[in-house]
Structure formats: C-alpha cells, structure tokens
Length: 398
Image (tube, rainbow, N blue to C red; front, side, top):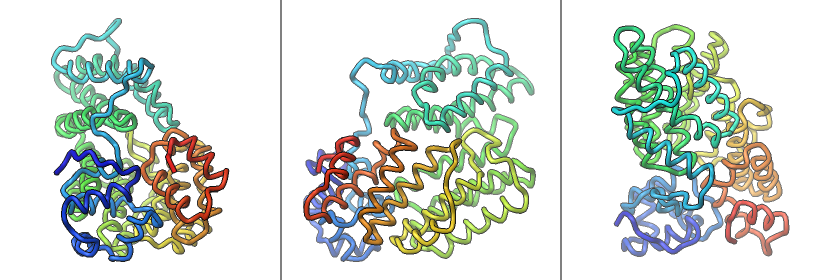
C-alpha cells in the first residue's frame, strides 16, 4: 500500500482516506496505535493537530510512509533552475564521486578543509543552507583525497569527511532530498569506526536514531542509543555527546508514552550541563547548549498532548538565542501546538508568527505548522485576516 497518491489536502484528510482504503475503523486504528479513540476522531475532523508520534503510529498501522500522510514526496526534486537546484545536482554528483574525486584548485590542507567545515557549520546553525549547499560538493572532493591518506593523517581526514557527510545529510534533508540524506547517513555510519575517534560512533548512532523516530520504533531507538553509550567516555566532549543522546532519548521515551522516563533523561542532561559545563558544540551537529536542553524540556509535554504543562514550563524560561534560530523557531512551533491544545487560539498564532520571524524557511516547511494552522482555521467560525495572511505566506490551503 506504500506509495499511495492520497488526495487529501491535510493529514486529517489523507489519514481518513488511507484508513478507509485499508478497511479499518477509527476505533481499530486507535487501538493498534495505542491512542484514544477520541483523539483519532479529533485528528480526522481537523480540530486537533496530530503530533509526530501520532503520524508515525498511524503510518505504521496503515502500512504507508510518514511522508505520505504529510503529503511530502520522497522523490521531490527542484525543477526550476536556481541556486538550490544547481547545488543539489552538484551534491548528488559529489556523493557519487567518492572513488573518483576531482577536487577543484590546489588540494586543500587538512587545516584549511577543517576551517571551511567549521564556517559551514556556523552557516547551518544560522539557517543559511543555500550557501552551505554550494560549498559542500567541492569540499567533499577534497576530503575524499585527504581521507585516503595513511596513518594518523588519514584518520584525521576521515574525521573531517565524517563531519561533511553528516552536514550533507542535514542539508539534503532540509531541501527534502530524502535519497541524498539517506546516502550521506549511510556513509557517515560506515566511516565512523575508521576515524580513530570512538565518540564518532556514538554521534552517528544519535543521527541513526532519527530513523527510529520517523518509523515509530521508539523502543528500538532507545536501545540503539543505549548501545552507543559504550563509546562515550568522561571527557568534556564526551559529556556534550551524552547530553545530545539524553535529549534524543527523552523524545523517544515521550513518544513511546512514558513521560516520566523522558523527564529523567532531561534531568540527566541538565545535570551534566550544570556540573561539567561541556562545550556546547564540540562536533558539528552536536548541540549540548542550555538552549537546546530547555527547548526539549518544554517540548516533552507537547509530545504527550499536555498543553497545560508545556505552557507552564515555557513560562519559567526565556528561549532567545541568536546563534540558534532553528532551535528558537522550533520552540515557537512547539508552543503554538501547546497553546492550541490549551485552547488559546490567539497565542497559537502569535507563536506561529514568532517562528516565522526567527526561522522562516524551517517554519514554512515544518509539517506540524500546516496541521496547526488547519486546526486553528477549523476552530474559528470564520478565518481571520491574520491567520489567512500566515497561511498564504506558508503556502497552506485553508
């Protein structure tokens, strides 16, 4: 049944269509997902925005992809000539040239290549994905050569290539290039043991756990992270990676339906940060900052449909970090869902507009934004101009 071309314009419509085609009732779907019957009804009615855990669970039961319910094509391409389409084509070619590198210009030294990776990492944090997309392909060609060296020089080259592969997965995912993201992920997972840094095996396991989130195998993801911990020592960078593992484990536990376990992981992450003050970003893609910890702490109740607790937690903190617009934007999106669950439609729209201001690209493409907007419109007797304006900006049909 995978690959269905469902005609619904929202998760609600596509869910109902797929469920009927599958021949199961709302009650049967709810029982197999371990969600309440009333929640399934509200999601299908469009009055309650579905959580990521709900969508993953429904997709698993219905035998379809999460992307199908979200209405996102896995093979989506950028047809119009643009900086993005050119960058995607170059990245695709570069990933395919791992055994036949063609670096442009004089071969970069390892120090220069590492410095460029660090600059690109900062641009990713600042949501400047297009520039990173333009720089990555040639950098990969240079790193292929450096990674092929012998001895310690080769290990260092492979470490830098490990960073570049993880960055490629991040950027490809941002532009909805699922195949390129998957290729890049497989590459860094396979490369990690050859870098001479055991900690990189744990970092790859963290990224690998994203698949368990996407497919709703939350306990499997927790087991993957637990196995990864044997590669984590007690150094400063190790503590930072431990925090990152704890944050991912918290989301997995929350979606598995165990909020107490999730909060234990969050408490451990905060304790590590308070006691050891590890570097927030010792490796590209690792974020052990207090900002990230707080964002996860506020998000946990939202994952379990507890809008009141999410609002309470958010009232005790200030999430404002110019260096991490994606994290701040994600927090605003979570709080929009929280206020919607709490019945405050005005605050819901305020948070959506705050997310738009701080991280516009992510907000426009985030799947929960469109579902929150549709639920908001469903709850209004008539769509107000502010909501209509946001929907037009985000390309959401009401």
